[in-house]
Length: 205
Image 1: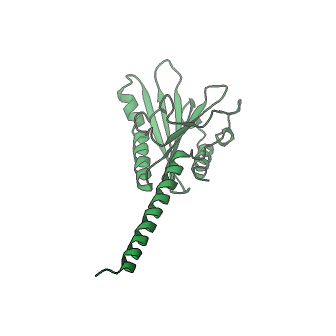
Image 2: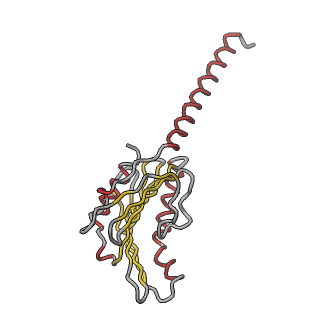
Image 3: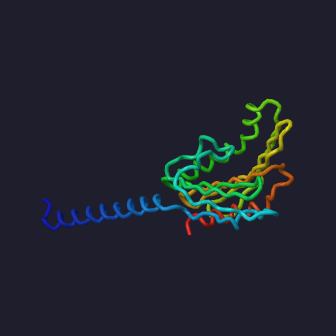
């Protein structure tokens, strides 16, 4: 037989558990509604002839998906910031607050596979074009980051080079794409690795 004190104790335990769940849910919802920390223009590889201009941190995805990442970045939980110079060099950062660290890790894997396959995918849809890619390795920051390069070119047109930094801090993922005319030998890989490290470190200040 249950005594009144037993019932009261059970009820108190249930109330504490419910309150704890509400606090965790509120904290998660608040984090999801708050923009992650973003790069500033001075965090990007220096341009020899122009300062970087940074747009506003904006909720949602960019109007146009970053090259190589079409169709894989989720709109939910996403924020972005565009960067430009007075010349052809530009960049964009997209950060995503995922539902959990495991979901974030899965997203990182998807993004890395998409970038690694980008050159081959681009060649299949671009007759006469040439493309190559390079894995520049991992970076020891938070839950990890990786840098890639992709080069594309078509006849009678300037070649393009793109660098990608993909990383994660807990349940938050960021990807930075930098691009300009040129090829992989011209890309500022060392500076971009510093940019990627800063991007991950700024996610959850």
